[in-house]
Image (cartoon, rainbow, N blue to C red; front, side, top):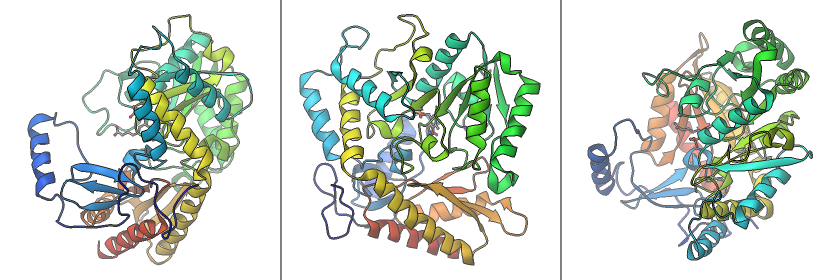
Length: 452
Ligand code: PLZ
């Protein structure tokens, strides 16, 4: 059972947290400020932070800081705590595992929970073909390995990524990622044999899905040549790039072209996967069955876990010993994943993502009707975004976006921005957020926009 209505108790880990926005101090309060000052002195300057607090607890739809402030969580730690922070199922499963063993290294002494996670991934990802899975620690590591597997399988080297893509911060995934600042600037040279193609961005390119696909395919064919391409890597809905939902028909046409040309179609579902969009995987919204699916984030409620799942013949092409890593599929992370998957399967969370979708989209579209600075409202499930523009020119308005986001955060509502042009506010609430907090968060946003 999921618990979302105001009059029912809230699923929140540990001691149940009051589901309220509560500001006892301005942000940061004194205790958070002290931690942040020590952060500045002890932690590398390159690690920024969006919300100026020191978190001490989180659950349901709130994050609580060291000064007792309770913030409405519309970010889920970037789409990770989809099943609710410290979900009780996860707390119980990880606690139990912790008392048995913390690590053996799956490549040394395998254990069952890794196998059960692989079985679950093989069952839940799109398509009923034979599948295999392999587990890693982070989204970027999993994307790298998906490319390794595709190269081994095809004997080809080139990889296609798209405009506005985000795939991580490691060397190969920086190369796949489109945006220079802050992800790549000064960090080159980047991995070779990565080529960028145009994506479908209906709000800006005004193209149908098939037309956008034809444009991308023509460019790839001319500049790279299908026979040289190991893999096409794409986020079914682009995340960091701006929650860009491709036009209908774009992904199926691209996937069909990959199939016809022996190219491995890799869906990066790191941000979109695991109930986030109201389906297990966003590929399902578009009727595509990827060859390989990359997952992370929502898979394990915040414990570090990621995976590559896909067609058995492709996945089995690397030689024995060719895939692995010390921590990949750590037993605590696997216990967390199995409990998180239980929560999605048994607590009505996919349906809850659709309810949240309706609330977010309806509300934002009402605001948009009277405020043309809100150029576009889009998304699926609990992955929704508002793109801010100068109404006269449709040009991205990053300054307005930053002001609105800062005002929301100052008033105790955690929102995240994204977008190549920095002009998108994205909404990624945990699916355990109660309706009254979602509405209150949007009240704060609406007021902040009116004042900005
Ligand atoms: N693929 C689609 O969204 C991570 C990045 C935040 P890791 N997105 C959040 C930041 O600024 O570092 C992401 C993603 C998609 C891959 C990744 C990478 O996942 O677990 O952060 O490596």
